[in-house]
Image (cartoon, rainbow, N blue to C red; front, side, top):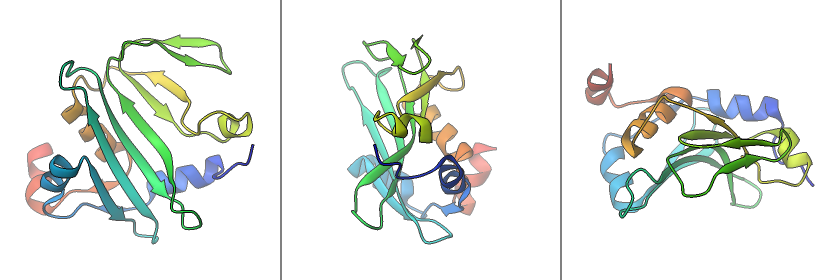
Length: 151
């Protein structure tokens, strides 16, 4: 399969500075999706999904928009408690509970989804706290008034 982004390029995308607009939280609540331009000109998308019947079943996704095709390339996915167990196919591991998916070159090379590799985590336990983890992990900058609230 075609490798869309190498591990080095994925790291650069994660580290790219991303400034959130003042009303980012309102926009994300209304649309479950927010587009942001990074400091190097890449276009990113944050996507949130919440199972309203089971609030511990959620996803917070960071994708970069391909300049060539306009398609999402999922860089990270912060998942809650799904009914299904996640399986890392290359490592033959089962992952239960809260987990973070990482885009990798080797999973792409084998024909799997770009972010098919995941690691268990105890860093969050809700959609909101998973979103905070993404913001910290992916070099997002909060508007000045909100930055103080998260410290």
